[in-house]
Image (cartoon, helix red, strand yellow):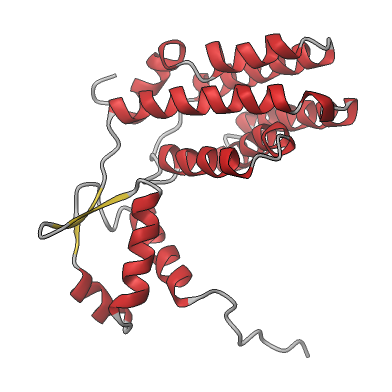
Amino acid sequence: MKEKNIINVKSLKEQVYDYLREQINKHNIQPGAVINMDATAKKLGISKTPLRDALIQLEMEGFVTIAPRRGIYVNELTLEDIENFYQVIGALESSALAKAVEKMSPSVIDKMEVLNREMQQAIERNNFNLFYKKNLLFHNYFIDLSSNTHLIRIVNNLKKRLYDFPPQKIWIKEWELSSVKEHQEIVSFLKQGKFQDASKYIHDVHWSFSVQSSFIMKYYFPLNG
């Protein structure tokens, strides 16, 4: 009989962080809502220390604001935020690809193409969760090759902010189909050894706020888009 794992390897702070993320993802804590430390600590049966540490991490990642004498509140995702995030991610991902050129082997490019094909299949099955996972893997293939841990951390945090806090209840199939086509364009550049073109395409098209703005409005602001 397999023994149950009775040891939780995560620290209390990490568990509290995961709990708060889940609550926000499930819309139990809405953007703009104030987080009451006393009530939350009491509800979880913990001291304020791990809760404070978890909130500090969330603030560092841009998900909450800790305002002295005013409280702690969940940040709303504004259109200006999204535009700024796109600018930063576009610059960093294009830089990551440029730095990863020497490690961009045919096997890596083939794997990226396979992932993009799996994204297409996920769209056909209306499986957005699978599409999302494959999409992250596609990008992570060349981002991780840059071996720049600071770049990787920043990009990952900004993508959490875009996609996870909180997740949208809808998905725009036209946008995902467009993303697949853009990915294939990137792969085509890489196959031809046109690494500079691939890097430029990521910056000027794939992560261009102006290019993607119509989809962004439909996804994040459906009532206004």
